[in-house]
Length: 448
Image (cartoon, rainbow, N blue to C red; front, side):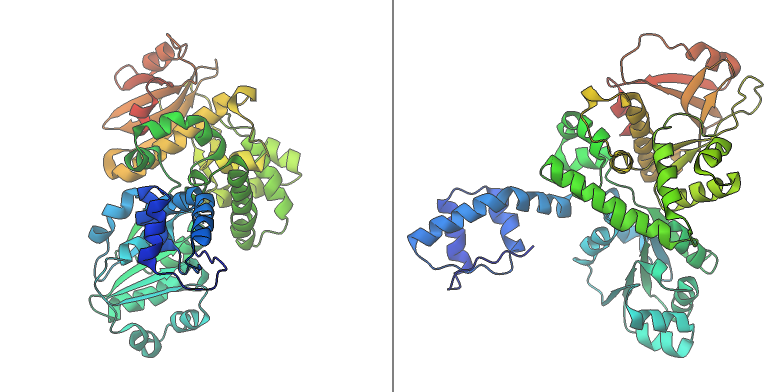
């Protein structure tokens, strides 16, 4: 961050820190925030020292939050050194603005080798990699220890180019990030079979927030997490309007931009309407036929758009569990938003929880996405995810099939003494099923 104070004389950094001490600025600001300013000009008089302290007062809180955004440690921060290997490509997927570039840049700060770093927007880099010519690619990257390509999905046939680099340049380490799994998976997947490791970076998880900001943070801010979500810049925004403005920008400038750029979307307004319809059906089974009738499009087109929304990290599809049970007749899927701030921005509702009628839906969506983050970060501990619903309206919100057992979870915003669904679930799978209710008293055990 740069702050230019329009005074006439360059003031010595050490002297400025003395001014900060006189003004009793917080230690975290002096030690961390100051080094974000590239230049501070001030006339060294008592009057201007007072002006400087006043200006710093105005910027201190915002500067702290900017720094907090940079300093929140992601789960994968400690894993990158192990995962970045010679002769392999580390692929990091995730939505835009979720912190992929920051994650890698923080790693590179302490990296001792020679690094080439660029983006898929670099036309020279695109020309080199899309040529698929050894004579161009090998000399271009020879001599580097590590190559980092951000927004790699913007490079046509990126997978073939990366394969040449891996095969022809011994011991080269490569990192590629992308904001669209649809594009990047299509272009990287097949050429790099056996040569890649894939990470998916989510918005900030409750476990990451608790680790970095303390255990009280997620408890005190649970309402904000349900309303504004957990994109890094949303967590670190100062006020409500700044959070909402940032969410609108993410929705319009990034989310919709990515979607509309893919798969030759001919009617982008249909995507927006579809997202709104899904937003109001969180926790409910979705009928493709009904959506098609409402949107005046075919069932197949609806299915294609929903698949696209999954691949661009907007939605998560949860399928029903119905094996070996005639009662579990549901064949429709449920959809959840991967970030609740985006969901609430899509429908234009950032009202407080005490004025809303969708708190139960928000709570269910919150638990689903936080559980997904936990699963991603703990790796092979988990199996497949489902929900379970019968024709007599008995339901288990979340089912995990792992270790030969069916772990069923019922989500409740309020604390209920007895579940109406527990007996039916356990009776349906007497040797496999377990049951637990997740509510505000015990939810941290489920997501952290």
